[in-house]
Image (tube, rainbow, N blue to C red; front, side):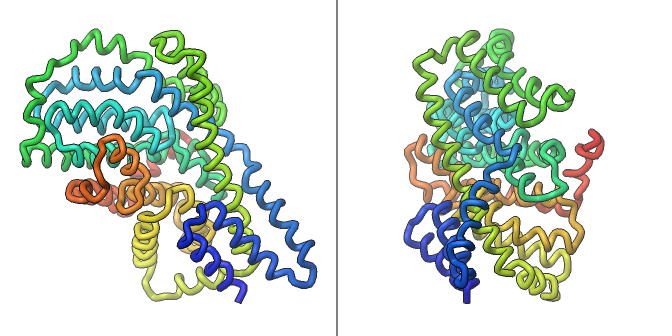
Length: 432
């Protein structure tokens, strides 16, 4: 009865438009209260305790810092300089600007772990550039929304940080290393249909007539942006700082580039940057802390064990269960953001992972690939929302194009499932 109350309350509040964090916390608190009728007030002390416990984890300190890094690099003009450098390398022609958009989004994935921030930074530069070259706005929004999804696979990644907090045995450095090869494969997989579609439908007719930036000048202007992932990831690998400390280093590096080198960020801009990143970080961390109450209610009510037993004994087998989980998460990903998916489902999936003895790092990459797909899967796709807003198009107009991109990234997920070494080789080689 109490279990039914937990899920019915959560679903009802979601249908009524209650924010995901509030729905998780209120449903969990109601279930905890109902389960402690004899000593209700004493039992409800678990609510504030688990609110704090969900938030009081050292790796989570990296989240507001990486969100702040995304805002700083968005305003510093680094994205525009990287675009010019990429165009100087690949040149002009049908499909080249979309290719550049994907490449720059992948590169910015090594600076900030936020997909929507990546979509905003790349979209603000590339959507207007592709419009001038003759690409349809819906196609441009689809490419940018899909390209930004690689951000949560290529380190640093907010999704990996949240997963590491929830799953014992999956360290942040190991997850960061494991996401590198699948992230690059996902970007390459997106490039193939993007260039093919552009050439098949004769898009970008005006692109060849646009000037090609000079190589050496573009390189000089882009060198500070190119050095950012080297500083962040190289410093972690060298042992100079932890992933959490790397986020702080990245903030100061971004401020130095924006305020001293490019001089595109002024002192008065800092308030706006700090306010925007503070609001976004607060939303993420509030959802994380409220989800701790929901997860506690799941464990104390004994929900997890029966669900695990039912799935394991369903007769589907190991790969059948994995396919079922992926289909379920793809469906859920159409309506929920990635962090919420992790916070709700990872506590339920953890016993299944342990039963089949799946590697926790490999499983984290699979789940993150799923979340990446959800970020540009209509009807609720956070990256696609941002790119559609910049392109001034409705999300329905992107379905024609985004389906091909979803298929390409789904094939990468299938490859990582079939060949786990695609995710595990690099962390094993680096000794994580």
